Length: 159
Image (tube, rainbow, N blue to C red; front, top):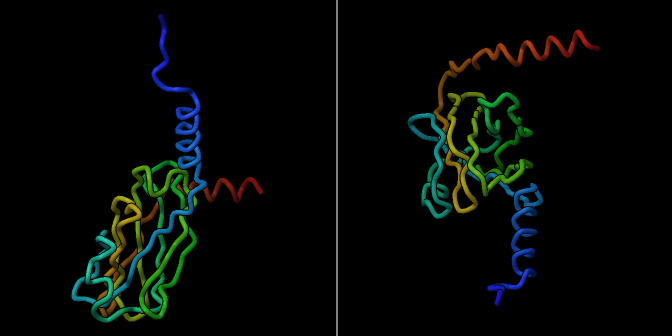
């Protein structure tokens, strides 16, 4: 005698829920705060970390994020500026964002401050980015991306 352990309906529902979550239907937001500190850096912290609400908050800092920066086709998200309270919330329209493991490259700038740059794992929904900018002369120069320049030159020739 053959017996089914579970009816098909719950399994189908679970499969559908997983596919929906992985298809990018979720509205994952990369959240964080920009503060002033002694050394420029970007780090992932718990959403309850006290440093997110302390110190000198930096408004109007430009935050740029690239998902999978070392991939053949990195995804550049629209730049965003931190609010008056130093906070920012950036929508990430990448399949599985917040669920799957992605690497991100974060560059935060503001005139009069040194740039903070880091490549790190994309934080989950219970974590935040804590970006520290240091007052002073900025010496940051983005690295040359030969592959990107070649791609851009090819697109220009194809027009």
